[in-house]
Length: 214
Ligand code: DC
Image 1 (spheres, rainbow, N blue to C red):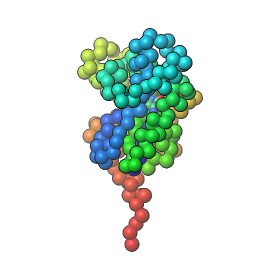
Image 2: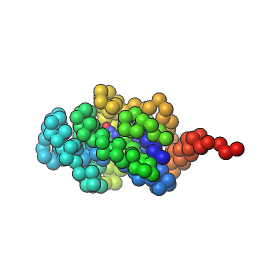
Image 3: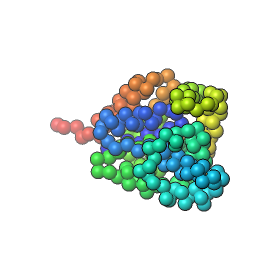
Image 4: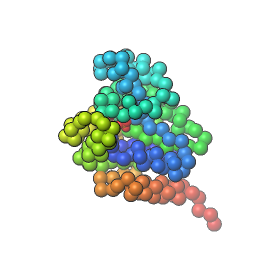
């Protein structure tokens, strides 16, 4: 079974996807980490945000085994990730690794922005997880604060709105709800209830696919 979970930053999609993967014992890929990995390398090398040739070279050489790094989770890396993610060559360079992950025999759970539309258009279940920008900014602010980042909540909200705009308006694989995705608004849900709602949708989709026995 392939489960595609898309949505904007801090919508809760990562936590939902990770918990669905654990529940169904499926491998899980946070595809945002791929773009964050490229962004982090761009920053480390001191490349300009708009340098598409360098971003492409770094995307092609990305070590996907080395993405479990707290340094990729900062606000600065997130903002740069949204810039490199708008570059078609960077997206093309990261396409195969994502498709290969989704092709695992037992299936997989992937989260990102274009999983249901581009990476796994034939996913068994597609969820589009969202929440108001204020709620998402609050969540991301608390997360960054916990990690010791000195940042104002108003700045986090401005960053989120800018990233939403960039992710939604880019020409290459923009953030958009797939027509066959189920919308899950987590604005008024804590993570437990958001997970339960997501699980209910997955179970509904699985039941709908199972041929009825006579
Ligand atoms: O989910 P995240 O915040 O870690 O993602 C970082 C950036 O990467 C985000 O601004 C958009 C981009 N991204 C993307 O374009 N496509 C994906 N499948 C995943 C992330």
